[in-house]
Length: 500
Ligand SMILES: Cc1cc2nc3c(=O)[nH]c(=O)nc-3n(C[C@H](O)[C@H](O)[C@H](O)COP(=O)(O)OP(=O)(O)OC[C@H]3O[C@@H](n4cnc5c(N)ncnc54)[C@H](O)[C@@H]3O)c2cc1C
Image 1: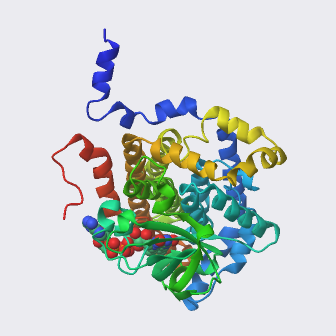
Image 2: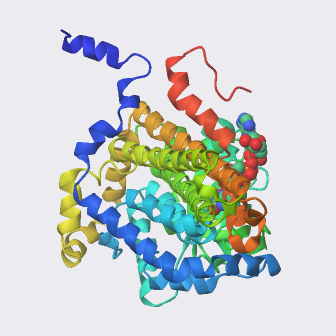
Image 3: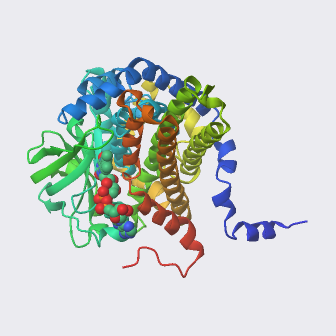
């Protein structure tokens, strides 16, 4: 009826089969154990919500409203005690080694109760993911071990990503824009390291973190080709914290300014710079984008999961209110119009979740997780006792060839089509889920009337918190453009993206 070559022919027509059926090939390739892992992670999150998050969410929001300088060390210490800052740190470095996709379900759960607290945990992995995406095995090992030690010593060791600058937010997340933007944070090569000057703003968890993955540029006229990723420790001379933003939402999670004045970072804390990429086939400019893409393709799925949590929190508040409130002698939940609204909200939650699940599948077969999620690798890694891994594998991470090998596999080994698929899906998830999150907040407030506006109901807080999700990790407009660039433009050669 149809030949193989015909299947191939139709598969490459728009929309390409691979863009349509991501989860179909990913399903059988996904290790079965991940199902149990995911259920466990969700249960832990629900327990934490019951014991810690729900009782504290409104109080934390109010505390910050009254005192914007408050730092939620109490919560961070609690999350550290529960082991959350090492949960997604690889076992070979002493972490608990949960699979990365399970984190989305975790932050959806926490986010459904409080987005600020979800971010206080989740954004640590934005920093860790950036470190991992440089594939600098020696530094990954060093920082991860610090994080693990921080858990053992009851002194939380968190990591940030510091990329946004006062004059460049959207621009620094997109290689085609960065050279047109006004970046000012410079990493100047000096004897034995780099000297950083400039500042970073809106850095989540800044004041609470020990390590900062700072993205700076050696040549401010050509940042796309001179990106330098540095690990900077709090307390390093020349590095200080500036102001802490007084934001409309997610108040519990600080957004900090990081200031660098002749801050010297030695070569052994340089995670990635153009000189280190000399052995790669891909040009430095493309690798710089790939590094950012590895991070945001995973973390935009995470923002989608935060947003699913917000959509769910709003839905749950609305359905509770409708089940308890009588209007004109009848329970609100028994009005047909209210039932249609609640069904719509339920749909928004489900579709948001599907968008992060699909993005995780894309990352699992084409992106960040594609090696570790291969079944033999996954089971080997899961089943091996930590002591054995320590003895056999850990020492290898110190060798320069390990970094070279990972960079060759990950940077040179990923095709342009694979990059587009993961990055495009992550953007789709980011703007779809965060828009649904806001939509559900509006619907909940509409359904609840004046009750929804009261602080003690918690619903107005979800709206204030959710609005931020449309902005960070690239505004939703930027993510729409990125989807166009990755999934639409390749099939329409006449389309020009990010034109002057
Ligand atoms: C709560 C919060 C936490 C954050 N946490 C971190 C963090 O931990 N680390 C970090 O590095 N950063 C962080 N950020 C920064 C965040 O990533 C940026 O705010 C985001 O990327 C948008 O950049 P911007 O705010 O500078 O907006 P701008 O880039 O100034 O954009 C302003 C407007 O112009 C539009 N626009 C910009 N460029 C284009 C273009 N080329 N074409 C069309 N439209 C365009 C945008 O869509 C937007 O509408 C955080 C931000 C917030 C709000």
